[in-house]
Amino acid sequence: MEHYLFALGRNPQLSLLELISFFKNKDINGRILEKSEEFVLVSLPDFNASKAMKQFGGILKIAKVLDDDLYFGSKNKVTFAVNWFKSDPSKHLKIIKGLFKELGLKATQKFAKSRSIVPSKAKGLDIELIVYKDKLFKVVASSNPKEYKDRDEKRPVFNPLKVTSIRFAKILINVAQPKKEIFDPFCGTGTILQEASLMGYSCIGLDRQIIDARKNLRWLQKKFVSAKGKWDLIQGDAARLSKRVKKVECVVTEPYLGPFFKRPPLFREALKISKELEQLYAKVLSELHKVVDNKVVILIPQIKTKERKVVTIPMVKILKNTGFKVCNPAKGVIIPLLYDDVKNNVQRLVYILEKV
Ligand SMILES: C[S@@+](CC[C@H](N)C(=O)[O-])C[C@H]1O[C@@H](n2cnc3c(N)ncnc32)[C@H](O)[C@@H]1O
Image 1: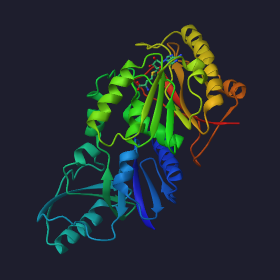
Image 2 (image 1 turned 90 degrees about the vertical axis):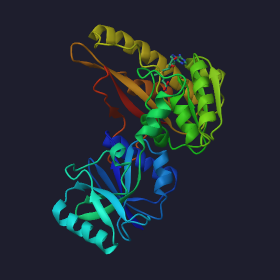
Image 3 (image 1 turned 45 degrees about the vertical axis):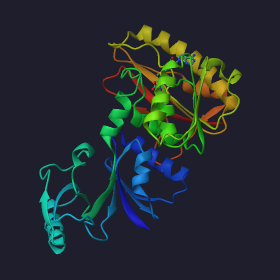
Image 4 (image 1 turned 180 degrees about the horizontal axis):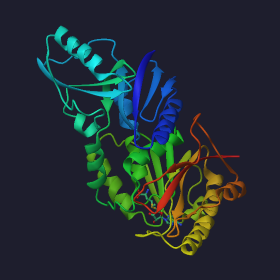
């Protein structure tokens, strides 16, 4: 067993939920030793960090406890940087410099003044280290924001106001713990399907219009050889989906969340929208109950109003009537989990559901 450090994304609870779900789904026997708002320390058997990193949406870096050489490359001059967490930097810097000297390397430190280095800046470094509670870790894999940005913005159909973010899509897929297949009954431009396909899952998408998703998925297949998962698109109404889809393994979806508001709506407007959404979600969940085998991971909105109130959807009632219950797969993470984007008037709650 080795000690690994996982750097969490901007919603630490969601990242933790993703990490625990990922371990469960892949049958990885990871024991969480410590967790904070920034890192989770895990004891793990042999683990392919680079491969895992490609699957994560909410994990920024994976570091391994330094138990062998600092550097295995062929350069004589290297650049390095150190992230600090609850440690005394000066003490460790001396040790680190000593290690470089032993290897006969001329090492230049970058970002000496910052305590934590964002993955996009760390890309050009030869060695990145983390000193976590006085223990030294070497970063063995980190996320690639540029790759995400390109995949997001360069696809044929992209509307930043309407799409689910790539990172968020990946997190939701991991949380659903699919084995082979996911179904998105509100697939829109196909973000969840595209990420699922890249993660090797087959996927089915349904929407009132599927032209956008088709264009994007065809583009993805041409551009990325790793987009191996098969996909199928169905044009239809999610409120009557069992007419078109007979059996699916699990569901990952960001449904219709109501109209887009530039400014917060009035309380009475929000109430009217929430009533409409309540009806839609009740119909969709009762349809999903007929076809789904495992988990349903669904985002449910809460509307922030001009009067500074929050209008919610009565999910307890909906779940009771549709035969679902909330599932809590990770200790210390409470479902539903709030995903609040401050710029947005609609907050989203992540629900993980199972049939009663
Ligand atoms: C929040 S968007 C989904 C965004 C999507 N995940 C993406 O990244 O593009 C909601 C989608 O629900 C679709 N929609 C709304 N009502 C529907 C219904 N009754 N049945 C099927 N699709 C519906 C809309 O066309 C829209 O594409």
